Length: 101
Image 1 (tube, rainbow, N blue to C red):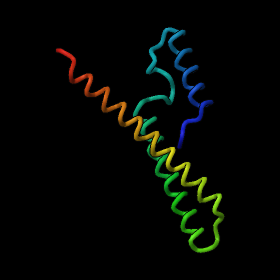
Image 2 (image 1 turned 90 degrees about the horizontal axis):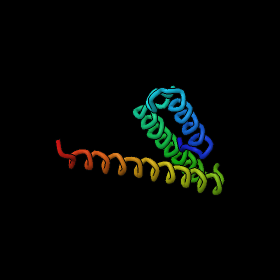
Image 3 (image 1 turned 45 degrees about the vertical axis):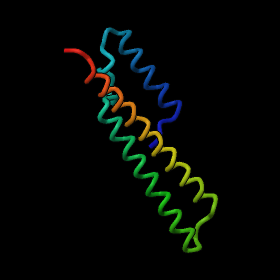
Image 4 (image 1 turned 90 degrees about the vertical axis):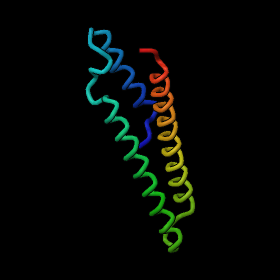
């Protein structure tokens, strides 16, 4: 599952409203970090699975080439998003390790 601009804007507005109302940023419903990561990973896996099934259907002569290209591009975008998030998490973790106690 990729995050669209509208979903990102909605999440931002929910967090801003929670902060405005005196709550913490982490108090937003359904916006915990582990849930976000789990949704991103399951979306990437489902996009890869749909790309595989589109490729198999095309190889069997039942699929359309445009559907295959679209499914592969969606899977690639999902994977690149997950890798970018992973890189940022690792970078943040390394920065925390460099902090003095």
